[in-house]
Image (cartoon, rainbow, N blue to C red):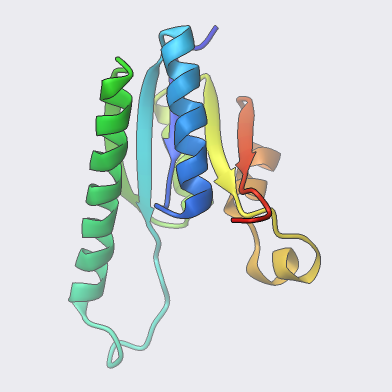
Length: 143
């Protein structure tokens, strides 16, 4: 059914719920799990932020991917890790195409109305434009 599953993550609570689903799906189907963390291009005033901010974000990504790899490894799932730079939805779609993934598993905060309109949604953009199935995992309301 699935040979390669992509789990893009930002380390958020919504993303962490998706980890369990992605690891479980990969373990049940024998698929390899591709982990992706995107270091987003953030427009800023150079005098306000130095290069250390990007390196700190990259370190968070490395730690996040390492933690997920341990969880997946404990379930016997083969894991590939990647960190990309750019707009998250674009980087996710490009990676999915490059690695010929069969499905994407993503967390979502479940925002609606004005919040979704103002903040946008990486997950929504991926769902609307992906060439493969996208499983979205919503945070519980009490979370």
